[in-house]
Length: 139
Image 1: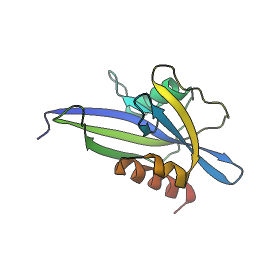
Image 2 (image 1 turned 60 degrees about the vertical axis):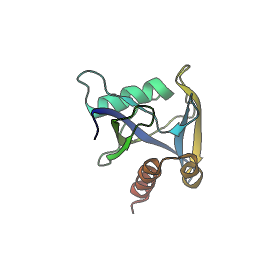
Image 3 (image 1 turned 120 degrees about the horizontal axis):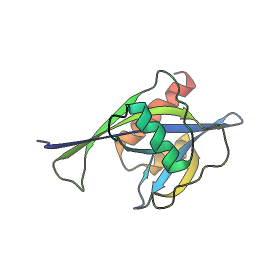
């Protein structure tokens, strides 16, 4: 039974280098790898939250691709009894320089699909990345 619920929003951010797709993976301060994301605040919509968090974490003004929305849900180990839902969109990065926000992000990685998959401990993150990769490939 879950007495608490948290909701975050973010995006699978990608860029193209030649004909290769690269994905933006952030390493959080505690060492875990994820997509840029964060908690909803006030009356924000899911997209507003995702846009704000992406800007705060990596300095990118996100433009989302239409038609992609994935969710991941899991129990928070650090908060027993709390269920977390994360809503992900898909955003293209059209610039070379991304800046990790001091105090939030340790580093930003740009990785091809296969390498990005290996970063994640959480199966839900791998599923979201796989679905985004298939979406971009038109599969």
